[in-house]
Amino acid sequence: QKEVEQNSGPLSVPEGAIASLNCTYSDRGSQSFFWYRQYSGKSPELIMFIYSNGDKEDGRFTAQLNKASQYVSLLIRDSQPSDSATYLCAVTRPGGGSQGNLIFGKGTKLSVKP
Amino acid sequence: DTAVSQTPKYLVTQMGNDKSIKCEQNLGHDTMYWYKQDSKKFLKIMFSYNNKELIINETVPNRFSPKSPDKAHLNLHINSLELGDSAVYFCASSTVPNEQFFGPGTRLTVL
Image (tube, rainbow over all chains, first blue to last red; front, side, top):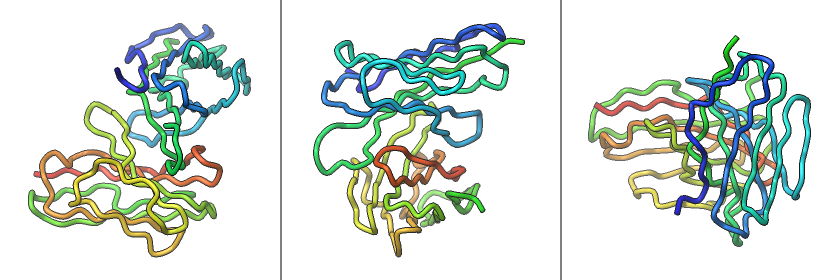
């Protein structure tokens, strides 16, 4: 079983709609969860992190975490064409001595159509 | 004033050569990382250094050797380059564990 799974997409939404990106992870001991945005040919950029069950909002972005279901999602409200990118879900690998050990999913490509 | 910088941005070389990629961060972070992103865009950690000490060494061939002269620099040296080493290599750094900031990447092409 893959450690972090994402639908590769592409996910296509019209401008102004809500884009919903999903991620599941296999290790119940994972404690920290991250969403990175990567534009084509660019480096990943951290946009959200969440450590506790529930929702966390930052501007147009909301991260949702459900540890019981091993599920984390990212909602983008009022999607803009500039949101078109690949969104990478990342999860910490639990266990001692692995500071900063992030496991990335393969990413979901989002396309926002004007 | 770039936070995490890498040089070179592009590197084209022949199989069997040895090459190095340099990384510097001016964020004052204690931990630095090297990642490899392959042609399928899968991003995988290779190494992590905390205050110049190796913390993580994933299953990376020993042809890859990281060197950290100080906590602001983490260089990657690759011996005997192979075709499969072609990828984009990203350096990253963090202070709070796991909230990592990435450099612009080095696209390595091995011919």
